[in-house]
Image 1 (tube, rainbow, N blue to C red):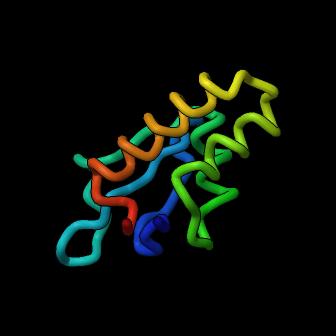
Image 2 (image 1 turned 45 degrees about the vertical axis):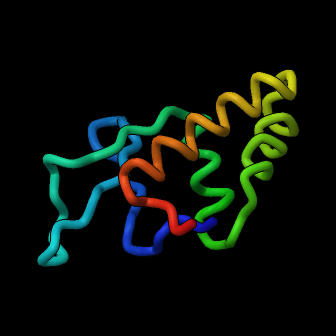
Amino acid sequence: MRIRPEYKLREMAGEHIVVVPAADGAADLTRIVSLNESACWLWEELRERTFSEEEPARLLIARYEVEPEVARRDARAWIDRLAACGILEV
């Protein structure tokens, strides 16, 4: 899977958000996705390459030293949220 390149991570008022583009190419500020620190870090690590479902979990384990089960759960939630918003190419 891959993060679609037309989606951009931005910082607004101290929050990291992904702005969903509108049909005319402008930003649709009624449709934004807010990311916490670890979700933002995953975005930056994976945004320019294709990755497997397992890769975000491996990255979380390496960076945050969390248990594999916790990392898999958090990675799955990150993937599911981005996929539900159409941000991921699968």
